[in-house]
Image (tube, rainbow, N blue to C red):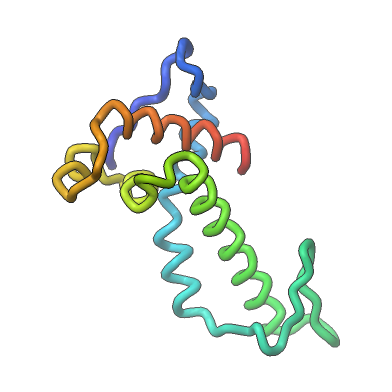
Length: 135
């Protein structure tokens, strides 16, 4: 497991340690969501999506269960991606790798990240701050 320092209480991005850890581990599930969405059958033809619920005709069935699961995964994935984009659109792909795969700032710099260590760390802290408020 990689180490990410919790922002200090003096930081504008401070959150309680428990909330920070929740945000950290929630974000690390992103690759699992992407993988599951790629293998789950697309039920879009059989299901109508509303904002708050998924509706099907008839009783409970496996298509409905799959549609609900896909919708939940899609919402989580989009929330994470939107938050990363909100925080740092200019380094979106690098910050996404950092918060979802645990890549270190040094690995990202070696991969061509176009910013310095301090800027990246600040943006990563801002991401965890915002996502902890949203989940």
